[in-house]
Image (tube, rainbow, N blue to C red; front, top):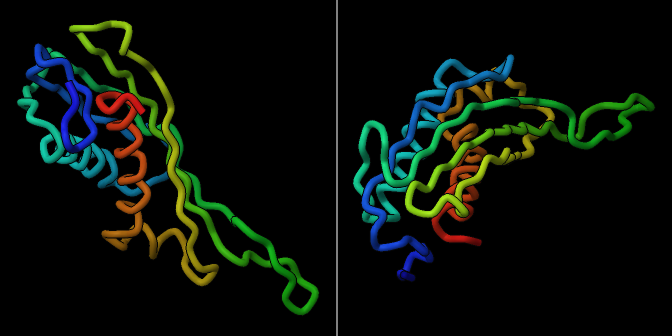
Length: 152
């Protein structure tokens, strides 16, 4: 079945369960686990008619954040010295998706998102900015949604 939001969900699929997505990356803000998990749940609830259940949903997600890296993205010379022109925040999330109604659609995949920031911003200011990290994680959540229920 197709819908106006681009989903392709079998009508027999009625529930979804999303386990806590743990942060196994050595860096990253303390709030990342809870925020990512809640944002993933919210996205599916806003964009599908599936009922969120604590476990054993028709569609099941679990996984972990495997990388949270902040590094120079472009180098420029200033007075003969190499300096970062911008810094890149890269987040990788490994997701295991199980479709109990059609196992051929199940997958395990690492999704990645990144955003570049001015060289003047350090990781502490980005981690304390409520919207900065969310910009990157929202890209990942959209990719997870598209891969699992939009079949893009």
